[in-house]
Image (cartoon, rainbow, N blue to C red):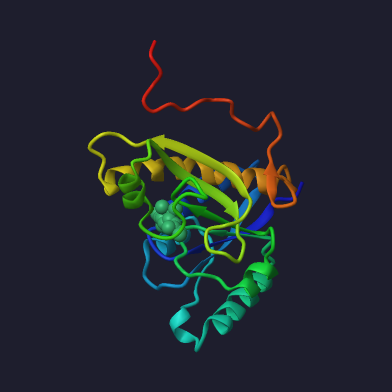
Length: 218
Ligand code: GAR
């Protein structure tokens, strides 16, 4: 199967972009990163893309009078580049229903919580405040409602005594770097089965590992 052309939308550090670039460096990976678009100039994500010889573009929302015109420019560029899948990786703009519909089931996001818990911002501080014992990240197809849509995969990490939002964020981020390439691999290889608004993973793909926190008594 031909490798899918993927664009990654970024706004900052780009460590998830790096994980995708590293995965796509393997010629058997079913997706190639064809374009990186940032809505912010001068961010580390752009350096990472340049280092991997991936074309970059800055489309700043500040250059447009409103959200729809910004998104029109974004879509136009994605189409020009022949992009088949779009991955949001720390892209900090909310996309309108129109854009989301246009890229229906071709637009993927990573969010730093076990959705549907903690959509929105400050997920790690909110997880600590709620006292959850497992936290993590989710990769999902994007729908118009913020941080919603069919969940492709999730990774859970324990919340440990003494965790700060920063220490928890670092543990989750490491999980993100494993989860996002794996989910993109499944989508790009057309191994993700959408039944209505639910993703069904084949038994072969699904993990049967159990995560306990605290661990059960021996
Ligand atoms: C990641 O933790 C990602 O899940 C989160 O921003 C961080 C970006 O880091 N995304 C969101 O909060 C989206 N709502 P990165 O730029 O190093 O990949």
